[in-house]
Image (cartoon, rainbow, N blue to C red; front, side):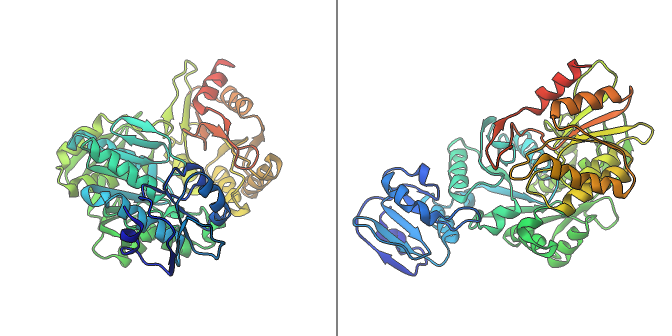
Length: 475
């Protein structure tokens, strides 16, 4: 595309044309710039892209999009805009020819359950429509081919590339996780969402959003831009979403939901329930999994799949790694890996465990969480009579002692029991040894993340499953 053709299609404050190079790609990462690319200088939360303009030019950028005043260089085209983030998405959509308009696109947002809900939808779309793409916390899956993504919700130019790669493989169904950060930062601007799903809202990311009202407003950006809205009516914020969007499709256990789970029966490792008269069986005893599956059921049914077909597919769906995942052992103990990392997620998993056994939880809290967040997780452990083994999980710019003190304060507040063991392998070994046969030992927080952040945001390789298996061998 030519510079002249592009500027006719976007809003800008000023332009300075100094070359006629054909425009190929767009990025906001100066390290990814190749010859003739557009570099967009985004003033982000941690980094200001305007500082990397010279680096982008060195790497071959011939057009710079910016919003703050800068110095010009000869031979480079410049486009000044009011908001670089918006410009990034607008230009990407133009260059990639709006691929989302050629697909059925599902977005999933909420504090908890995004990954499980999205992956269930991905599985069902593959089974029912032949193939699908999934973009989220666990990476990008185009069909069965996986690749890493830097964020749960990548930037728009990365998403558009994924969409077009999918279309090239005749895949026209895609589901993606829409994080609140991604929504507020306009990473999803211009995507043509057919379905927007809201799972729930609880305390998280208030270091970024400041208040729950702001956090809720961020999530509602997805529903505002979705043709069909699907909300959890059992969640207080789901009710608010339904009030905001009266035409939203609802799911839940309570009466009044369009897709309501009734006649719920827990078995040893499965749960049975009915939805609108149809029998369903899922391979989990976690209560919150019913909500994740209801969201998927509502979505696929509205796409045109019938409930009986969806039920047949879900019955054989084994679920996701690190989502209430049993770890095989010969100790007769229920060792579970789960990605739970918020107060509500902790409570939900604790509430799912049978009450006639003891529960142990091995976990730490990220270094970027506030005191209230940590206290609430401590409260959740004590309130549910869970023995906490407080260990390490991404201290980042904080330190283990300070983080642990704040978690322990929440446990002490309600008279709970805990042990402090900084090394995660030692903590797991201790918890498994302390538990009796039949007890539950929950390894929480890391899940499928294959790293630990000990110093700032630097990633040190780490594998939760391998660590758990070592702890089992230590018995």
